[in-house]
Length: 207
Figure: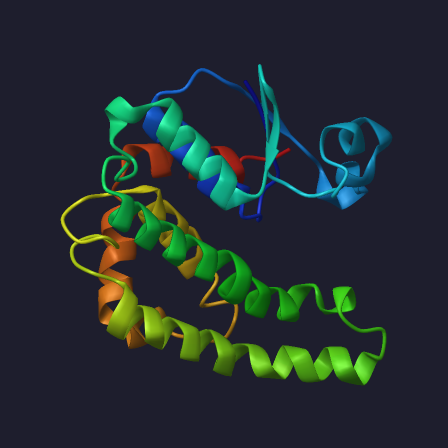
């Protein structure tokens, strides 16, 4: 498999999952500073011009929730998802979809406002709304969606990797993670994970 990623992107989530699964893959880093994600070569891999993208023997998979589920199913022995419990699997997907479709989009209004508006005033208004939205969404996660010690309760899953990655945006979005004690404790435990340490070191390394 070939995994395409870039620093400071959500690709870190699927990257950690691949490490957790013990998968054999080649990691290829894209340079967003020179818009390599929009190059003809990469657009042949992912016409969306975004990361992550995972090239497999059967084809190419994009979008974080899809890659997470694929990895969990490809390596069932690693128990990265409740594959034998339809309800718990659906709850995991519910959580992952919320992060993808709601929380990530709210965060992106701070750094990618041009996707939704051309008017500078409108873009600035979106930025100002980010702290409130992110705080509201993480309050819902803190009080109702995050079980203990993991997202699904006793069993660790790819949802925990996803939550950790997204929670690392809070400071930049003007939100104190310590306002959410369970989320903060979850992040501290995830930071001790060997796969997390390995991948973060790769993302922080110079190009």
